[in-house]
Every structure is written in C-alpha cells, then in structure tokens.
Length: 430
Image (cartoon, rainbow, N blue to C red; front, side, top):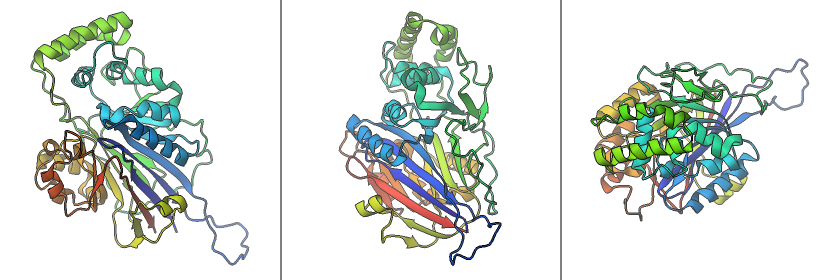
C-alpha cells in the first residue's frame, strides 16, 4: 500500500497571505530477502516531508508574520523549506520573505518572470523611491535576495509566461519510484527547472548567477512521482505602455543593472518622474500573480480529510474529526490573480486541464476577496470544497467584498484574519 499525507495551512496574518504545507508519502514496503515471520506486515519508511510556502507578507502588522515564521520554524526542525513561491511583488505578500529566508531558508525561491520595465512599474506603484533599499528587489530580485539573505536560499526559479499547453494529465496511478539514496543530502541542489544563459531572460541581469534557473511553459514540479506543483504565469498580465516607458527603461538598462549605486539611483529618479507624469499613482498592477496548483498524481482511493484547527490535533497529530469520504485533496493558490471574467478562469482551467481543476478542494480566493478580481458565478466554476479568504475585514479595504463572499457562500468559505488560521489535512492511499 502507498500513502500520501498532505497538509495545507494558512497562517493568521490579516490583510496579506502566508500559506504553507507539506507532502510526505510511504512507498510500498520492500520485500525482504529473507522472510522472517514477525506477525506484522512489513512497513516502509516515509519519504519527506516536502515543505512548501506560498507568499509571506501582511499589511496588518509585522508581528503577525514574525509569529507565523516562528511557528513554522518549530515545525521545520532545522530543515529548509523545499519550495518558496512568491505570487507577485506587492508588499502585503512579500514583506516577510527576507526574515523567512534568514530564519528558516529555502532550497528554491520561485517567482513569476516579468520584464524589467514591468517590475519597475510595480515598484513605483508601491510608492517606492530610488533610495529605498527594497527598490532593488524590483530592479534585480536575485541580487536583492543575495544582498539580504545570501545563505538563505540555494536557487531562484523564474516561471516563464504560461503561453503554451500545460503538462499532460496522468489518468493512471503512477508507479512509486524507489527513493534515491541521496534524497536527504542537504548539499545536493534541487535542480528544479533548467539553467539559463544570456538571452533567455531578455538579458535582464548584468551578471548571471549560477543559482538562476527557469521553468518553461508547460512544465510541472514533480515531487517523488506522486505529487505535482503546477505554476501558472498568466501571459495576459503585461500592462499597456502608451507612454514608451519600456523604451526609456531599455535606454537605462546598463545603469540599472551594471551601474554603481549613484548611477542606478539617478536612472530610477528619471524613471519615477516619467512614471508620475504619465501613468500616475494607482496604475492597475494587481493582475500580476503566479498561481500554483498542488495535487496528487494519478488515481487514489481511500481518501480522508480533517479540516479542524483544534489544539489537540496540532499537538498530537490526531483527533476525532477525520472524515472518510470522496475528496479531491488538491489546492489552488491564486495570490492576487485576476478572474474578472469567465474567460480568465477558462484560460487557467485549460492550462491545468479540466481534470486537475476538478480536483481542487481548497481554493484561495484571489486578492483577498476583492470584487475587481472576481466575476459573478466564479465560485460555481471552481466548485471547491473550501474557499479561503485571507484578509482583514476591519481594514479600509473591507475585504472580502460582500458580493464575492455571497458567490462562495455554498463552497465552504473560511475567513483567515488576524485571529483565525486554517488547516486542511488529507490522507490518500492506493
């Protein structure tokens, strides 16, 4: 018998997002060379856990993220996170990332690829100025991570725009592979994606660090052959540029990426002036978001779930709330993704394959439940078991908006705010 045990968890960070989880599995027990009757069936050793994080930020108070990082650090027990995904570059989704990397670390940091001029627009829209240290993240995110948390990560994986078909959907149960002998070697690079060379990323980096890798459209991240993470970088999110901002950025590329601090600051000052006199504050940048599907590969039976947050379960790992029924078990994280029309959902569903989309049990409602990133009837198209709103209703944004909440009312809405988190545990076997 093969088992998967997965956890999806949302920390109470208020107006922001900090989701995490783990996947571990038990392959079939190896048949011993000498059969010794012990009166018990042979047992296999578990593989994992493979730990992941999606976003780490808040605008409701840094202590909320600090407390959550401390909680996760205790769970990790000195091990690095395997995969840290940043959905986009807004402060309420990333302002805890540096602390997370320095306190726990990550083998792979995954983020959406966007051209330099687009990243700079997002930085200016956040109110950042040339002299702000965080502005370097929008100029050169890899260099910023090296500067702020050099020992906290092993590689950066850029997800290219998802403008092709997604990977094929496996209709047959996979054959669980034998775990490699060096699976737990902490010095072995994860090797996700493929190395990049000059030109692959539009020459965006003055120096091409060996830790930079890329994941092309149509590729998934395979976890031991039994679980997959499939990112989606919406190719339609690049904003219009009626003022020639991209051309101006291109003319200053050398100063931005290879110049000294004074040259970079001067270039950013010029670009910010152009931004303020053309785009102006409030340019719509919320469309940018790397979405992430995570689910089991192949066909599984014997499924059970527990979605309680009781202290006894958290302390002991067991409780009386397990429900044995057919459940799908996959999670779909959307960050601040845009679902303003049925066509937006259709594009994502087509990339994932409808059969994956129908497996989604936990759906993180985009942009904290904002009406601007939603359309009436979206909930029925997704049809999740649980819909998570990670927001702070007391803040001025008033997220989630009432019409979005009503749309998801029949699909298990869960409010994750400053006080309440949410966990969803699933066991699969075959």
